Structures are given as C-alpha cells and as structure tokens.
Length: 336
Image: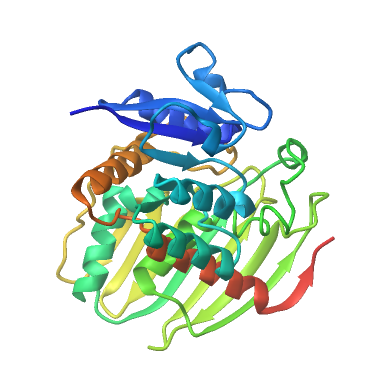
C-alpha cells in the first residue's frame, strides 16, 4: 500500500505538533507545506523533499489530504480550496468560528465527495471514551449536575506572539473558543447542546479584545444543570476538571483521567491511571502527540475505508455551536 500523503496548511507552532505526530506513524508522510511566508514548520526544516507553496492549488506534488493549521477563522478558506481539488480535509480545532462558515465547510466536502475530520483528540483518550459509553448506556443513572473547569494561564507574550491572537475576527473569541474548546467538545459529545445558556465574560489580566475569563450556567431539556468556567488568567494554570454527579454517585476526571469514582454497583473502569496526557494548563506547547497520532490514524483509515472519521465535521460542529451560545447569551461582557 502506498504511503498516505498530507500537505500541511500553515507553518505556525501547531503545525509542528502534526509533523512530530506523523513522524511517528508508518505509511503516512508529509509532501508539502502551504505557507504565505514561504517558511516550513521548524520540524520540517531539515527536509529538502517537502515542497512549499503559497496556496494549496500551487502544490505540484501528488497528495491525498490537507491538515489545516491556520487560525480558526481561516479554516473554511483552506477547506473549500482543498475540497474543490478533491482532497480530503483534516483541520485543527475548532471547525470554524461561525455557523455559516462551518456549514460551508461541511457542504463543500460533501459535494466534492471528500472526508472531513476535526482534531478534537481528547475524544481519543481511553477514559473519555469509557465515560461516553457509560453515559450512553444509562449506567450512571440520572445525571443532574455537570461542572467543567478549564482554568489555564497564558502570559501577555502568548497573545503578542501573533497579531490574530485574542481577536474576535480571526480567533473567534478568547479562552472559551481557544483553550476550553477541547473540553466543550467533550461536554457536547457527552451531554448534547443545552436549551438554556447564560454567561458572564470579562477581560481581566491581558491587553486583548476578547475574554480571558468567564463563567457559564447551562440548563438541559431533561433538567440537568451544567456549569463551565474557562480562563487564561488563572495563575499558574490547572488541569481541566470534569465533575459528573448522578443519583448513583460521582465521577471526576482531571486531564482526561478518571481520578475519583464513586458509582453504586460499578467498579472504576479507568484505563489511564498511569498515563501522562498533555494538559495545556500553562503552555500551548504540545510534547505528547499521542492524541494527534490517534486522530491522524483514524482519519487516514476513514479515507481508506470510505467511512466518517471519529470526529466528523457534523460532530465537531456541536462544540462551536455551544461556544457561540455562550458568546451570544452574556449578561455581562467586559471586554476591551
């Protein structure tokens, strides 16, 4: 079987994560980079066999798919260009920053007969998959409360590192659509979209136009109450924490690992107690690429098997839908 060939679109920091992940996978390769600056990701600088071009259509080497590593608000541009060329699309989270842009991506890929996947790699963590199965099976009983905390820290230099960071137009928002997006994806995957959302957002410790801290109250159709706190202002940064309470007891996950389990009649099913998983609590740098490796492997298999990826465009759409509800239902928004 021939190697599956990717073109990386974008040469910023996140592109290195995908390069490093693919370097650990067999029969998958990177043959090109799309970069307006003409630069390769640092991870690819030693390679002379990787073509660099300013647009996807100008890549002359044959390839199967693109990985979009551009800022959030540009994802639809790369996805449409790739789909029109008949190339499959894997994009860094989020799918995009508006409902119209996401629908355009999904429809373009469908009309051109190409696969669309989104890198919400925390869905690939063993304990998160176990929790999903147990929730869907009803073994947790009646869930009445879900509390999610994503209290990260980023310094001002992080936002100053690129002109698009901390903007509504390109980033699409602050800590909710950036740092908390992976966990909001898990929230919507586990529990669906709430029918009532109310939030309070603010900018407290950074010179940016979007929120760096906020709190959300959510009410689901079945009566379940959820809360979400997201931040990049909480020093020194803390592992994300999910607390799920039901009439059968309590489950707590920290950084994708079940750390507390007290459910009547069920023993702790965790498969990750000894694992170290990237938290992102105090740094955007990713050293553990196992989640990305799993997402990329599944995406390649989905293309070859002519099935949907584990995280399809429609599946990933839910996270942005919930984030937009958070942004559109604020009682107070004190942003610069």
